[in-house]
Image 1 (tube, helix red, strand yellow):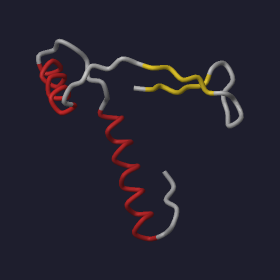
Image 2 (cartoon, one colour):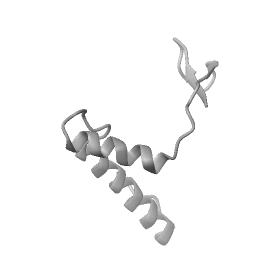
Image 3 (cartoon, rainbow, N blue to C red):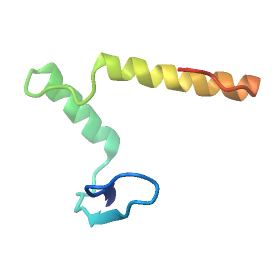
Length: 75
């Protein structure tokens, strides 16, 4: 996997640094279910919160409304 990010300077004209990350091959659904089971057992914290999910749902609903109406939808 490639990770691209800004250094100290950020913005359109700032250079990006590229980093190669070693990621083990795995089925993402299996990994998500394993994480879910560890959360249920109290072995680790969730990677995203209910607030994260609510914001994501709001964005998806706004995209859907914008596509349907052809207008920008403020968030």
